Figure 1 (cartoon, one colour):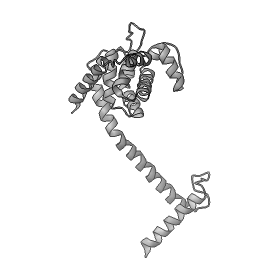
Figure 2 (figure 1 turned 90 degrees about the vertical axis):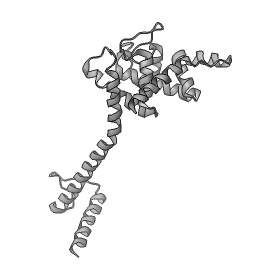
Figure 3 (figure 1 turned 180 degrees about the vertical axis):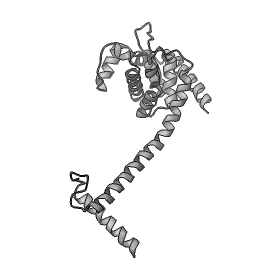
Figure 4 (figure 1 turned 30 degrees about the vertical axis):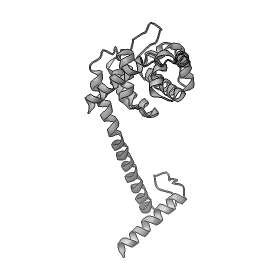
Length: 222
C-alpha cells in the first residue's frame, strides 16, 4: 500500500500546484504547499524540462545532418564571407527551407545556380548576393516579411538574402502552382513569365539547370 499512498500524495501535489497556477514563494516553493511537497513538484518540473530539452536535441539531429552536408558542399566554393558568417549559412538554409517545406538541398542548388555561393555576386540586371535578389524586389519582399530594409547592404547579408530569396520562391510557387514555373519566374520575373505563357511558350532552361544541380547534390548525399 505504501507505493500507492506515495503516488496519491504526489498526484495531490500536482493537482494543487495546477490549481494554484504555479505561483512560487520568495524561496522558490509553491505557495500553499509544504517545503517537502513543493520540492517534489519542483523536482518533477525539472525532470520535465530536461526531457523536453533532450527531445528538442533529438529533433535537431536530422537538421544537423543536413547542415553538415551543406558545409561539405560549401567547401568547394569561394564565398567571400568571413568565417563566423560562413559557418551559419548551412543553418540559415535549413531554417528557411523547413519554413516553406523545401528540401534544403533544393535551396542549395538554387544558390549554386544563382551565385555559386559568392556573397558579393552582382548580375548584369543588378541582382545581388547569394540568391541574386534585385534591390526593388528585395525591398518589396522585406516589407512583406517585416524585415528591416537597409538598402542594397541588406542583400549582402547572407541571412537576410536567404530569407528574402526563399520567401520569394515560395511566393512564385503559390502564384504559378508549379515548382518548375516558380523557378522560371524567379529567373525571368513573374510578369515576363506570364507573357511567355500567354504566347504558349513555357521556358524550361533555367529550371532544368537547378534540377540538374539538385540531382547532383542528392546523389552525393545518398
